[in-house]
Length: 382
Image (cartoon, rainbow, N blue to C red; front, side):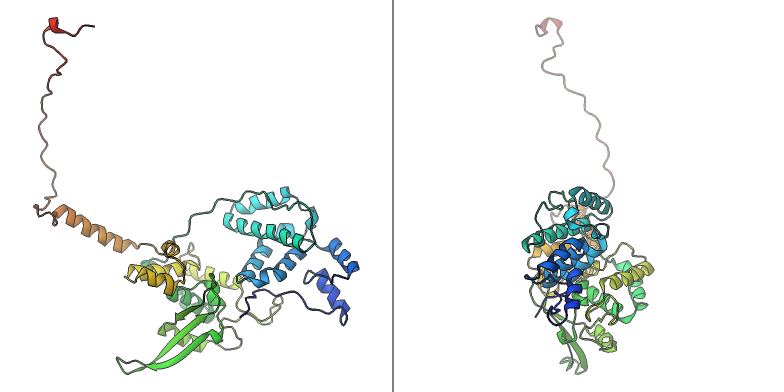
């Protein structure tokens, strides 16, 4: 199965449609033919950094599972430099942009700087650049500690109430993250062919009930993952219109959409901000819902190895440890039980601690130092 997330190079034929071919080349949707030296010269003179980024997306990012997200991030945050001639971009200009963005979004600045540096490297590999890479030698911001935010028990009620007011596609997408622990990007990439819903008789009750299974063909670690769908979510899948191969289909006639696809990240982010604002959870991100799912499972006694492999699809338990956080209530109960055991000394058999302070011990008169003599004639010389 293909991993393309952004459109690949344009396929206009210079022999049958010369005008479209030239337009695609000048817009950065494809490279000119190797023999077309005249158009190559025009492209070298007219291309700005925006066209380089477009080529980088179509020839490199299109083959990556997170390519679409990275392409959108570059366009969003690299705007101050996109109108410059890429051969005239200086390290000073890149450094000033990087520091300005990093003042508020250091992690995002690091990611975009990496893609900008790689874009210049790719253009050099493709024979369109020679010189000093202006993104080289810029010190990255230190990595922040991994997020530990999750939706606490007292916050679940407001969150679920706010989700009920959201449009059905966004409501279901965020519920998937919360209840099955998937990444928002994975849920957004769900296709109907990856989803299987069927009815099955419960052997315990004899009642017919719905079952669901979602097969993720592509994940962050390139391992396929099969996820059971909770029965409570299946009616919402039935209510979604099947107008596209995508479960969460995007707007088919959006002017910037070159091909049918899922919901845009901008719309997902916008609707989540509305949901979080209504629930009073402005500091909670969509990815924190995945951490919430893992945290609740582990704190309720589910084996962490099962959560790691079966739910989060992690390669090792160390990664899962970042996702699971200790809830305050179990910690409080554990500490109270431990304090009661220690103070009552159940394990040693000694009488229980009274809980009152012991009477102060009267001070003992200090013993005279053996080096101090009461007889002046016996004093130590010197």
